Length: 384
Ligand SMILES: [Zn+2]
Ligand SMILES: [Zn+2]
Image 1 (cartoon, rainbow, N blue to C red):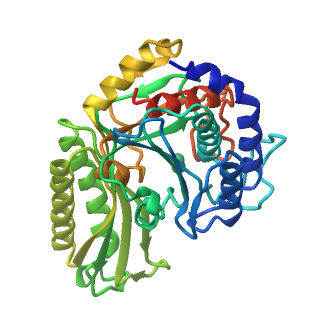
Image 2 (cartoon, helix red, strand yellow):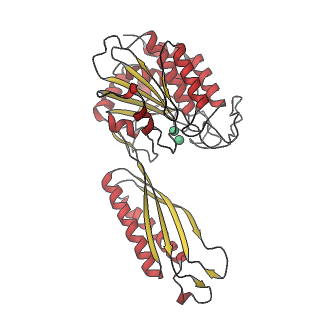
Image 3 (cartoon, protein in one colour):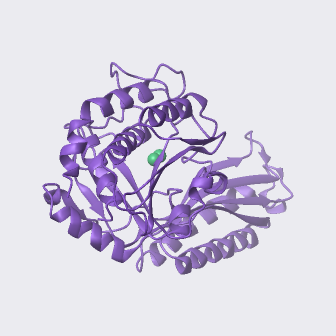
């Protein structure tokens, strides 16, 4: 068998070049014209014929030597975050208000490296490499899966990597089943008559309703998370604008993260109940709204088992780390795993001494992990 790790190692310098270029020129959201053009050009230079759609990224089909088994879908995201970079790296963002703080620049570089190796030494079965925009909050996986003829596949296995800025570099962190959480948002509007601050007995007060709700929600989360980890965090409160008027309206918004459909349902109905109770106690009306976010990333247990066994047979084996609990982060690779079985893993990429997590303006990632990431993609292409 081809030594995929050596192949990946030989491309390290080239991947670093891709990474630094992409890092310096970040684009946010679904529309990433420069990033897409760069990825398309590199894939073309490898001898591939990429398929590109505005707002839906770039894919390329790589023919396998036999091409009878399931297709391997290898996915990278491409978008940056609306942040001002504070890393002081020599290849820092040249675009104001945009930064690759989640490591998607590394994801692209490692997959571009892997694509080149796969063209040079094809795996047995076909591979589709996917570069998708709009992961952070635009659900870019959905238009990407819909737009590409390359992804019109019945039988496939999907694999993706996410770098982690505060886990040891080269560690391969895996879990079977739920890998990342369901993510939703909520909004509660409290409406009261409002009135003069000197006559609280006459006016339903949304501020008091909000206070009741926030504290009761914390207790509810504490009681439910005795069984399974979950989150409901109130992150925004917009109520009143002066000292002597009881406002007629107040709004709370927040984030929900859960690990199973049952917990999700229990938490949402609990929050809805608490909103009504808070309104009843304070002479206000409550309107609770759930804004559905991302489904959970659910890894296929058998696939993860094969991955662990295959990686264990290589010199990357000592890096394997079973996660003690799923991550409460959300990821739209969830949509790929709803379509085909497969898995996502976290690749540790900590730079020694740095404690800034992904999304921080000073988040940095160890470029040496590009080799490990490309090797993982190559092993996935070989069916682990
Ligand atoms: Zn992110
Ligand atoms: Zn990310």
